[in-house]
Length: 243
Picture 1 (tube, rainbow, N blue to C red):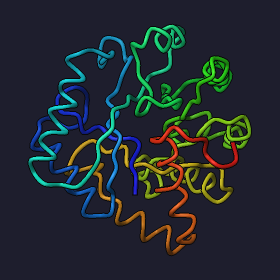
Picture 2 (spheres, rainbow, N blue to C red; picture 1 turned 120 degrees about the vertical axis):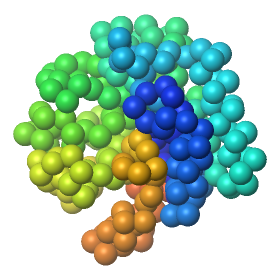
Picture 3 (cartoon, rainbow, N blue to C red; picture 1 turned 30 degrees about the horizontal axis):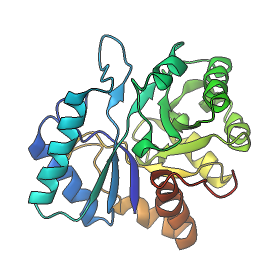
């Protein structure tokens, strides 16, 4: 399986605090069937977690890869970012101050929870217009999507990738978020489910409960599509089927 949204790079955001925690998170993921992980620190959260691309960030990622290798954990790590949308998003992409998921055409983009759908639409369209593919992080957590979830069908139709959070399925972010997540899954409007893991203790990288849920409520084929096939296409810079 593949996890395309994690906060395991140590000491850069509200995720892992240190290399020890990062190793624990990777090991937990491996023990529940994950063998490829994209590291996606928060980026472009001005005054908080800016994390624009730099030699320092790349070195930290390389150090984490080396630690995982030393520990003998057979998990591949790839670099990405969870990019907070802003008016200068396209400029940041073109200047390579923000990076895509494993240097692919896919950019993981998040919004503030109270963002209006009209502004989300403008930002997502601007990314499509420069030939890139936006992966919208956890849309079920956005208040406007919770009120008007059918917008996600339109996003999917336009070629925008929909990434659901594991925790949303189990109510980690509240009743409305859980309801929206299950509505999107039921209608098959998502492409990927990721952990959005922040620690080895809460919001973890473990995918065991999610696997059991998908096998019980959906099918092995759907679990493979959402947790392996489509995420692998992103890592390998291939078009996801149906785009």
